Image (cartoon, rainbow, N blue to C red):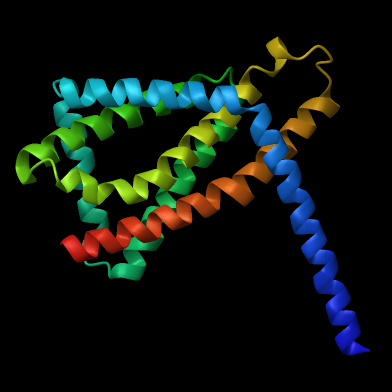
Length: 205
């Protein structure tokens, strides 16, 4: 009986997880255009940061130095945990604070894009362009996760302008669906990206 009860419990849990994943993927299709706009904006400012790394140089360098200090002495596991926690926090903030007309997600997208381009430029100058290919794998997972989170925030922020009903019940459904996507899609992507990035940092020194 215990075995049967356990299997029944696992079966219910599996159905629950699959149903939420299905709903999350469905909602992901609904916010596709917002995520694509976020990706476009990110890439534009990454190109600007790479081609014209002249803005906020001191602030960006200080940010990098601060991150190095925070991760100094961490082993591979500690480094992965730090990266995953930091990226998850940024993505969550981008989603939640998008409620305020989507302004903060846009700012995060622009800043992250420019900083990435800036760092890529300095890294390529220091170590050669091939080093960027080594850093590409974690970006394959991290960048989609961030733009999805930003897309979720943008849609929440524009709720009053793009829905006809404008009811609390509908907004609540949007929030629940956003959390589904964040937990079941964004976080797993960030975990994979963090593991890859942490390993690359340790291996490449």
